[in-house]
Image 1: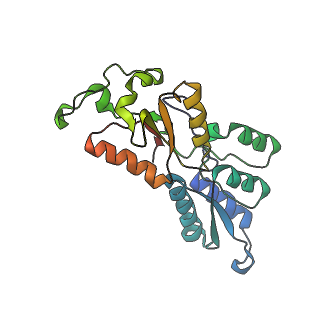
Image 2: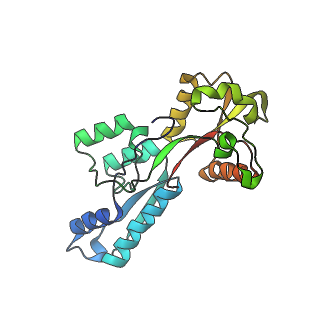
Image 3: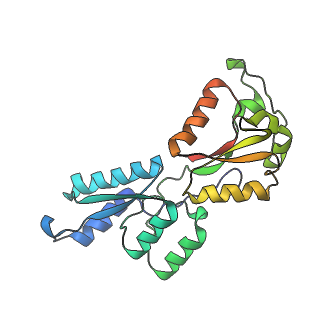
Length: 228
């Protein structure tokens, strides 16, 4: 993962997953069919993908024995390897590269393709901080900001209300591999001396923080991803 983008490869594609699973289940009576278990990791796009695949299975193939197991990134991926989970619709591979490579090499999981190609993850500030936004009457407050390595001189724009001697970096949630990656990067980039590592409590808290700051035209520095 870089400061500006990373590549996402999803473990399964909704239609492909449905076709593969229903092919394997062909000929089974409804009473004999075991549940298909989805890894219900705790972010919106993965949960949407799970429901789309389940909808196809139920309404396209008449298979309604669906279960969702909530949990964190690595435990659910290991559950997939063990067979406790049947489908993981969204794996951010670069956040768990070693575990992914090991599982693929062992033949424990099958990669059925990319869920969406317009994806990225990275560290963000609002564009109006760098360029301003005349339509909203917002002047640029960090016009020379070009790189993560410029962030120390702008820390006061992101002042942490709980530690006013540092700025605040808005990290993602506990249990996500990207959260640990972000924490390591904060140290690797030399930002731990000027920014606190604020780990949000949930997906909603993270997205709400970003949306609220943007709506008010305020400063914000943190992690997010697309297409969510």
